[in-house]
Amino acid sequence: MAHNDEIPPGPKAPDEDKWNALLAEYERSGAGPEPEAPAPRRAWVRNAAMALTAAAVAFAVLKLTGYASEEDAGKPAAAPAAPAASGTPAGAADRPPIPQADAFPASVPDGAGGTYTRVGAATPNPCAEPGTVGPRLADLIAGSKGCVGQHVALYKDARNNQFNLVLFTMKDPRDTLMLVNELAMAFDDYQVAAQAPPPASGLPTLPPDSGMVQSFTGHGRVMVVGLGQWSDGRTADFQKLVDRLQPLQQAVAMNVGRYESE
Image (tube, rainbow, N blue to C red; front, side, top):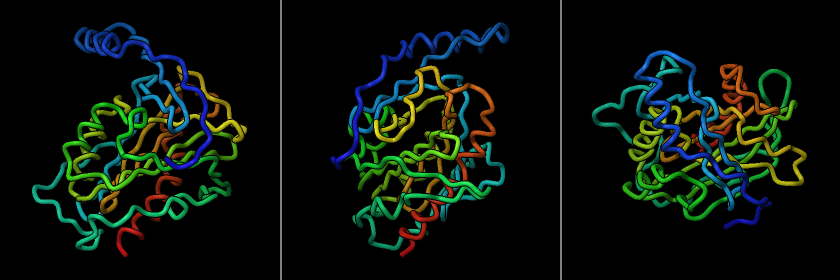
């Protein structure tokens, strides 16, 4: 694994089965207050723990280069019957992933006069290393034609809101389509770990009940996952948080798209 700053893992998450049972009961009843969601556990790369949504709210967008367009960013597009592999040159299945430095610039304009600043990056190996992905995503990757590599980065904006970007480079672009479809459909299932800030970043490690949004895009072989959290971890204003995440995710996705099209 690449060198990176590490911190001890966060507090243990509550029982997920108990949460799922409570949520199912709530949905059957159609009334009453929503049960309290389990809290996410967060840590930096090697010690990363899987995050469970703090408010059962997330954002998923499907935008797959060469596969499908998405007019409504809040609803995943249906997968075409025979997706094409455009966006990735033929014979590129074993091509190395985009270099980490090319994918994650030190700073990215936010489109409103501000800047996102990279505070940490790493390259876990293998793609489904325990602690960096959940069991469902690990199973999906195991059933695919293979994953070439994974990159992760943590950014902050001027107000210290935290944004994780995670890249999974698959051997077959059709597996990228499959992964984005599967993960985007389960908006309240966090299968990609959120990273806690390195100690030298100046950012606090957010409490375990912090809110989070997630977003997925696909470009050639690469699934780009974005995770966003407010600086104070509040479980409110999720659409505004999505809006804050998107310029950064789009900038990283453009870097990936250029590399995949070469």
